Length: 373
Image (cartoon, rainbow, N blue to C red):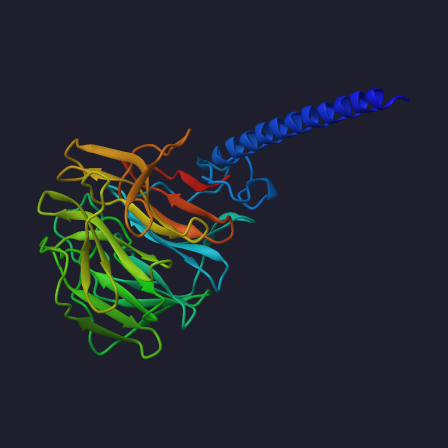
């Protein structure tokens, strides 16, 4: 073979190699773009190798599980996940003609199950529950001793604990004044403090509170705190942000006024936050922390002066990342409702929503899950 022919052959080989390299680069770039699109659409798990180094937005959705044996429809029941029991605990609630004093448990394996403890608190609506990690018990405080169809009535100042089998009344030397909340996340466990934090609520005379208390489950004592700053008097919902290690309060209601402010409590003082975006003013909404998303989740609530004034209930979903609120768009959503129960359920690894006030004179027993698909 002549030298000229060999040079020609080498040129063709180099050209083919260059073309193959270009085609391979194009294919890889196209495949990476497809993977990125799937990751960002939430169609590929964030932990998959194909999503490494790609901005991932989890796909979030509301799901309505098929369940039988639901608790009766109601609003303002108290609910929290009991880590020691491995199930979500629900207590009480009410309608226009019924005040409940029943105890229920929810888990992925069994759905809803009514429990029959030997001892229980009195029938209550608008009490608050929190899981006390050091003692592995659930703490209940306050609540109204009448249903919403009754005039007058009184609130409770009793403290009860649940050990997974039965309820036990506690008798601390000092207690917060009697109160209730329309949405029952008026207190929450602060794992940084190792105590339960309680804020606000209202008395049977509709005196709105702005006090902060802490429950020490080991010593079984309530202690009032006197922070330099505080949200104004209101009934509002709380959540504990485990990422930021602080209690979060959003909105609330007092004397016909709804709020849209965000506050955090660091164990010493309340600090008002100023996010660029916020949900609209509301009260009686759900608020709880999702440890998978590592964010606080807000759902629904009431945008208006009272529950039976024909005002608008909401069914929007928002996330708090410690600095700002962002709204989540989902294909499905629970119906607009207020006075719901809302907590993270460890058995389904999802946010659990139960019950609520859906029109001026009707209530629901619907159960929904909000989770990463």
